[in-house]
Image 1 (cartoon, one colour):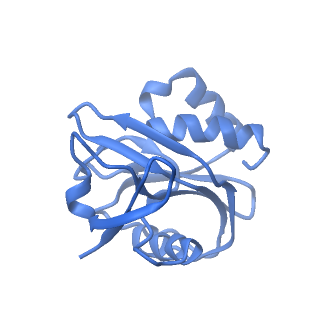
Image 2 (cartoon, rainbow, N blue to C red):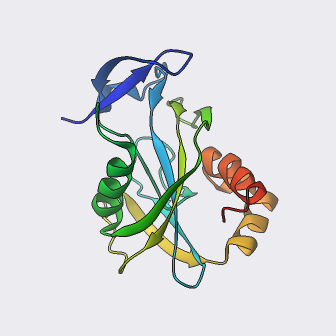
Image 3 (tube, one colour):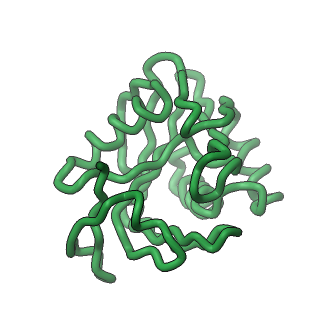
Length: 173
């Protein structure tokens, strides 16, 4: 059973909960992460969430997201989820937005409420995603993709919309 770290409003760890119980209409603040994977040509890997996902099913988003297990090193968690979700080994994992935080409600009323440090990494191999996690994936030009997201933000995950503009401002993608 996967667990997540529950957080106080100040971001301090205050407990743990089973991952499958925290995402509800009253989701407690908890620790997560997002990662944006680039290839050797500077293209960005974007994914469309599996239709079976509890939140934002079928929505295009960043490369992958996840939750570090209690007491798991954040970088280890990012590597673990890249392999679990995308079948992908990554290198050069860099935390670029350490303080990113968001709360969003999907159409079904399920809430995401996370302190979610954002990472950038480099792909080291081929993508072979889990169908339970990813419906589709594509390598895209980050500048063209950013323009697409800016012109139709409703078509993408809310965290992608916010994170991508911040990453662009920092020159990270």
